[in-house]
Image 1 (cartoon, helix red, strand yellow):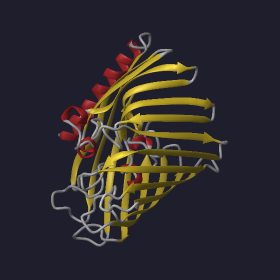
Image 2 (cartoon, one colour):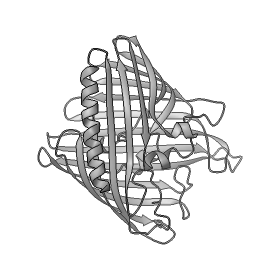
Image 3 (tube, one colour):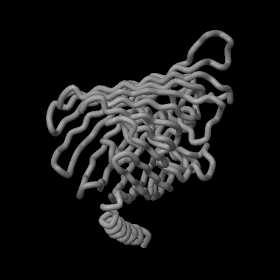
Image 4 (spheres, rainbow, N blue to C red):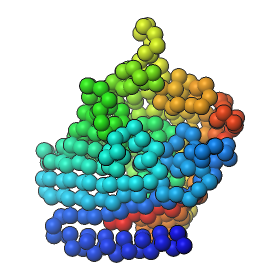
Amino acid sequence: MQTRNYIVFIFILGLFLKYFNSEAQESQMKFGAYIDSFYANDFSNPSDNSRPYVTQYARSREFNINHAWLRGQYESEKIRASLALQTGTYPQYNYAAEPAFGQMIYEAYAGYKITKKGWLDVGVFGGHFGYESALSLDRELLSPALATEYTPYYQTGIRFTQEITENTEFRAVIVNGWQNIRNTNNRQSAGVAIDHRFNDLLFVSYGNYYGLDVDGTGEDVWRFHNNAIIQFTPGEKLSLTGILDLTLQENSTTNENENLSASFYTFINSYQITNKWSINGRYERVIDQNEILIASPVAGFDQHIASLSVNFNPIENATIRFEPKWYFGPSDYSTSSEQGSVYQVGFAVRFE
């Protein structure tokens, strides 16, 4: 019965958005919606069904909504704005530190075109660096890598985006910290990113972040994060992507000039079998022994992680995915398991 109600809701929502988008053509308004539902089974059997380390697909052994939002957008030659309100287990876990109103906001910004190909946006928007999207539909695999989970999905502040050439884009931000809607101290943070596509074969990107953040002891510490991406696409069906994330952070437990570090090495292989079927693999090496980003139920986080996602796209903007994931240590996966394995299936659809 519940599944049938979801299908009816999605059908009615699709008709609603199709009608309003057709009516909004001349007014430059656009409406959209996104729904991402899932079932996951974590074989470490978390006692409260809350999976460790993740904010996406974070519930074990239950059907649930990972992420759903409704969005309205406006864009003219000089002005643009977007407001999207969300629900699901993803905002429940990822926005837990935000005030109640902030947990509802997926994005809320207004922008002005200040150069021929440059926009200045103010408000809540997506992170300015990184490879994987917050949306399953826009990723190769069902779940995101831990590097994606532990770098900003969202930011609040000012964002400048400039298309330098047809193949090069530059971004700069001044924001309320690492991943905050409400600022946690009296200082803003800054970051830049640049993307460049050399040709159909090679794409590269670099982004960084520098600012004050609160560590596990509640102290303000300086954090400097670097993200680098290189992607090879040797053919229409195959792509190979390597991502490096390195975080350096001030050590608040000693007076010495010492930095702590966390590193994420991510490799993604994507192969398009047919127009509707693809298979995608990911390997991650994650080391955060000092727990500057990943709070672990055991002493320090040190894992090799392998994921395999089989994707079926029946129509445009809809996908069904099955993904097993394995954690190989060397540190324990949880207090009750040296190694961990998770099997999860998801269905995502976007209406625009």
